[in-house]
Image (cartoon, rainbow, N blue to C red; front, side):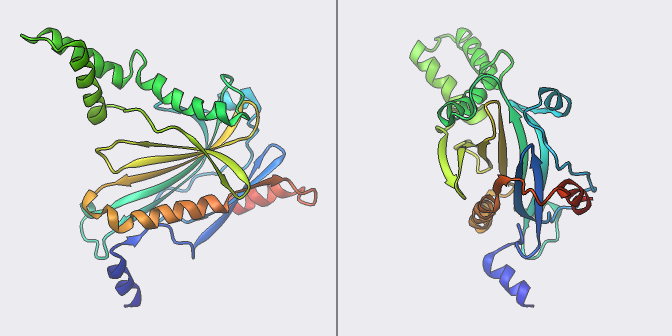
Amino acid sequence: MINLLKAFTRGFIGGPNFDNNVHHRFILEDKLLTLDLPNSNVAAAPSTIDISFPYNSKNWYEQHKEDFYYHEYVHMLTKNWMYLPPLNYLPSSEYGMLSCQLRIKRTTKINVLDTAQLKHFVINEYDIFHWGPDGRNTEIKNDTSLESTKRANPWSKEALEDEILGRIEVYGYPPLPAAKKTAINQLIWVFYQEKRNNCLTRQDFYCLPLSECAFLEVEFNHRVDRSDKHKKWSKHALASQQRIMESIKLSDIPAEHDNLITDNAEKHG
């Protein structure tokens, strides 16, 4: 009864429950990455979790990498948390979902350790993909330009540019805000965000340099299924995101933990 009353008071159930945390450890070559993540409240088939990521190995990266839009990475871990109404009786009544994914990225285009270069790189990769030959923004530009030529009174150059930008804002991938540096637990991250002005769903990215060619990326996806209910759970999701980021620590592997890989295999098995 108390839990139900609490759910009605805050307007939702679900989301990350930090009373149900799992402590994760990963070997990043000579470094130990640790973080605390609440268990997912979304049913999923069990999957094997790798715990060793030799990110400086090009061969390893090529063998394990995945592609999604402009993102190329090696997947580490994903957790999902649904937000639901206090009385959930229809599948379509879901408010939304917060997801957290850890992954390793590699590039030889920049020196990743230079955060100024990394800030430019993450935004530029987004622009290159969506303005590329097969990109959505390029498609919108070409279609709008063709439409203009078929009009009785074609748009002027300035009007055409405004029309293209307006359609990209609604249907395409508009420019992103500049990436910025943020310090969490004495680690310097590069943060950037993907978000349309006409959509509440967004993705927040935190990038941590690991070497000249590799970085750790933590993505938080705030998927909004019902915009009229987003206000109820948005603050909880953002606070959960911050708490997860504050749990992330990167340190040298302790010499006394020679059996760390074995311990992790048993923990995640």
